Amino acid sequence: MDALLAALADPARWRLVNLLAERPRSVGVLAQLAGARQPQTTKHLQTLERAGVVVSQRVGQRRVYALRPGRLRELAAGLTRLADTAERAGGPRETYDRYGLSLHAERLAAEAPGWADGRSFAFHRSLPGRPELVWRHLTETSLLARWWTPDDLRVSELVFEARPGGRIVHEYRDAEDADGSDPVAGRAEGVVDDVRPGERLAYRLSPLLPGGGLAFTAHVEIGLRPTGTGTGLDAHWRITGSTVDSADFIAGIEIGFGQSLDKLAAALAADPHDPNDPGTPHDPDTRSTT
Image 1 (cartoon, rainbow, N blue to C red):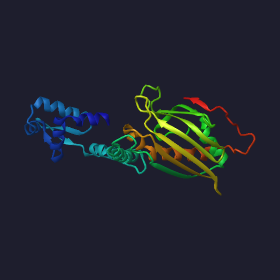
Image 2 (image 1 turned 135 degrees about the horizontal axis):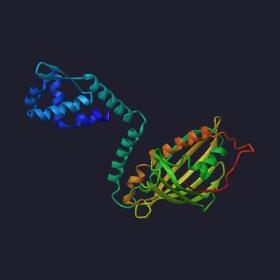
Image 3 (image 1 turned 135 degrees about the vertical axis):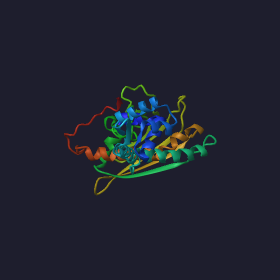
């Protein structure tokens, strides 16, 4: 495929392909119609033939070239597959476009400090597992790191001290940035306000701007309640202290935290541990750096 794309990338060769799509033609005629010298036309045709785009045969004193439509159909099919992959429902491109629309709207609204103060976001999920198990995934860093980032990101530093006044640090990078050479995608710092194991968790979290200042403060409250099939989770975000530069962060709250909760549901579904089983391991350490 690479050789095919390279062969077709040259405008002069693409002109020859268009001429041969009409009918087979000799080198001399192709040179005349393309307005080019015959030796250069011959070189272009040889490149196309090596890539499998054209075929040639000697007819008397002339060499006549014809197009191989199958190669173009293979290319078209490959490009269609790429387009279908990019446009698949619920895929990364759809999320990218949704974020772009939100980003545009928030940037227009961010005219002065405090522009987003009082804004709230609500999230609701029905989760597998009892509240005790969900609580562990909300507060233990080894479990929290599995889900507390949107898609395509990974936790690079995480501190969560699950006690009133406890410190929170949440830093994340691109999931494909294996060696950490790419800039940090985001970092937030905060403090835990209220802890009622298995019932309620409240904390304040502030994303940091590139210069180190606070973009805004999110007051987050998460409530858990047992249901017949597991646990109902209700999360509420309330924004205060919003700066003009916070628009990019606020635009991603609904999409980003929603994706995180979807990952939480998947992590819980895959967790084999029963929190009521005395043999279930419990990691009291609430600090992690990865």
